[in-house]
Length: 115
Image: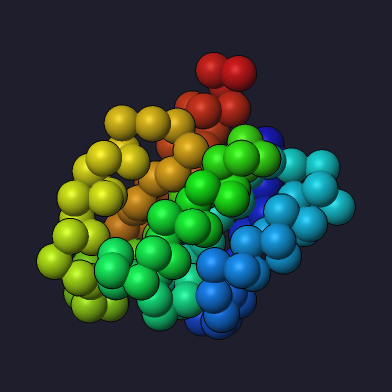
């Protein structure tokens, strides 16, 4: 399974507008699957009131790009509604939130096998 992966400690996206970087990289590498780490995401992503998470996820969804995010428990502080968004998104197949890389990879592989 081919996928794009951010470095665990790299700041990669500064804002939701940087979704174009992810989309372009996916097209360049012939994949629609991305594994990022919490550190790769803009800080506003974790605060639902900024709209960054919704904007970024919608842009990726528009191009049918699946995103798995690895975030160690306690690594970042989230807004009070962030867990609700995670639970809501867990019902779909475009975004997954995981505490371990192995779990994120297993999810991405299950999705790839089902298509």
